[in-house]
Length: 318
Image 1 (cartoon, rainbow, N blue to C red):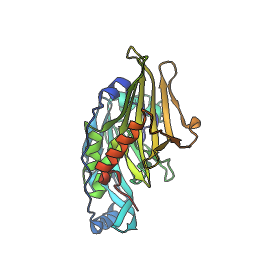
Image 2 (spheres, rainbow, N blue to C red):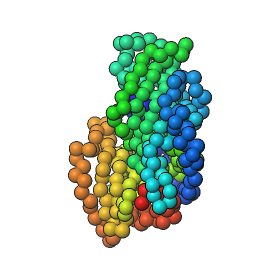
Image 3 (spheres, rainbow, N blue to C red):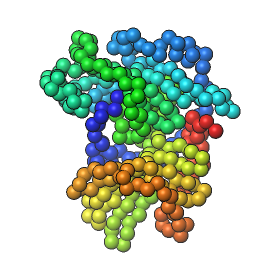
Image 4 (tube, rainbow, N blue to C red):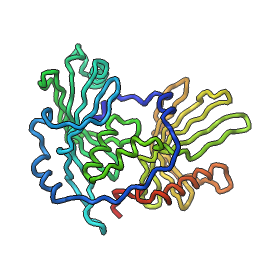
């Protein structure tokens, strides 16, 4: 589930969570397709997901997140020179709610009038369809339950919108757990939880004291041809340390050519809050001059890819 109105992480919390370091490279994975085929035949449709065995993933004041490892099945693969590579994975997940989490969720789904007492919503289950190569999640079925385990609301939509997973998405933990289960690894979850998840790729202070800081989310990095695609957090502060603007962008950087383009993103200012940048993105590459200070950004990314080749090429179909 995407929780539809799930908000961006608080600025102070997010900024405080960034620690710079060098992640370890991912290892090649071995997949037991015979087991996965049998599982797909028997578990693609769960008759009563509310009664499955749930593995805890994460909790905060509003939500606790779980997934059922036995429900993870590979439903599509592509033949490559290295053998079959999963391109679609299904999983059942569970979310339990505090009073505040239930209230927020019912409001986000437009169900507050139908369920005026948030305590009516105890937990929910959802079936997610995941595409590892694109880092997308699609919620195709969802059920809300009361404390007695009775279904109080359900929705099924095979054509539900696909949402790309990044640090701001509610489904990130579910995505990482399901992909790791499908590929018999723990690399996605490790990278999401790693203290060095965010890599500083550019720092600069102008003569006037304007400070620019750019961090790349290594958990989202992947190579597509010559492009390194990832999400980054750009923060600009004035000479007094006050945040002037923030950009949260999905970018593609052509490493050999030293060019980059924005693909999607949001922009924040103290006056206007968060605004979408999608309408302003023209999809054009811009050159990063070798003579510019910003070229250090290209060097940092090249170094990361060279030292973490297995990670940025994971799940590749080439």
